Image (cartoon, rainbow, N blue to C red; front, side, top):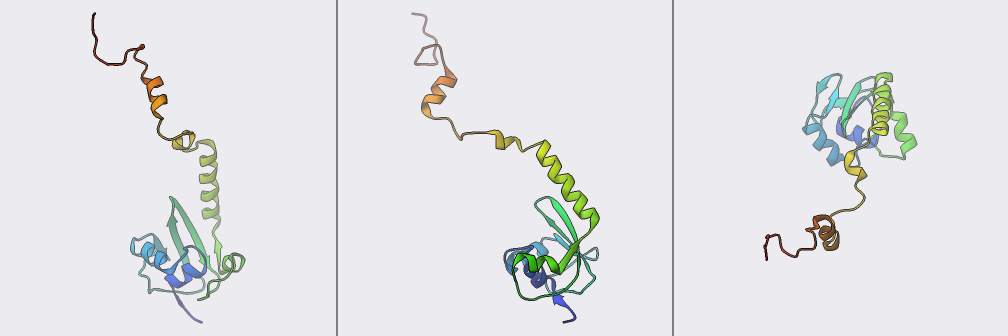
Length: 134
């Protein structure tokens, strides 16, 4: 096998769960081969550099082999080798997430209940917001 469609390769290498998702992401311009945006039918060859932007991270890998069948994860990881710069960038991003977690993750509960809202509002025992000087 000399070349393989990039969408098939991304699916076989387990970057995306379905080939349709891979095609969608390629259409959005989130995949590059050798520094150029590609179309789903673009052939990828051994030795090509593929850059995939996903979830705010950019992964750069070098194609080691081709497969048009999706196999288990350990086999899929043998299809590519991630560059040192990409590994360092992913480690740095993971470290930043550890030290500065998402603020929304600290919220323990959703919306307050009716009773909790009453306690939050606490109008001093009044049942109405209007001020009556009786």
